[in-house]
Amino acid sequence: MARGRATDFAVRDQIIQQHKNGICQREIGRTFRLAQSTVCSIIKRFTTTGNSSPGKAPGRKLTLTDQEVRLFRRHIRKNRHMAVADLVTWARQSFVKTISEASTRRYIKRRG
Image (tube, rainbow, N blue to C red; front, side, top):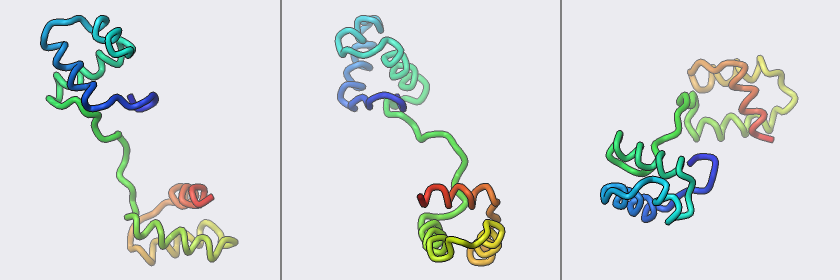
């Protein structure tokens, strides 16, 4: 689901309804022109969570808030020749949070 095109909520509900009516997954896939694995994923998600919508993507929470990221990017833009170690020191003092050099490099890379 995450890689391909998103499936509409209405289609997901119809897939679940047809599954409840006893129609096999292959037939449901042919009806909606979806891969059988997609139909299987939708049904599996519904049976485990009770909801057909995709869940939140896994991953670690961001260290900085959106506002802090904007401020950090602005500081990087103004001081673009500053060393990464100095940027890390500035960020730790400004945000009172532990930020690694790898995270700082990631923010620089995302800035473009």
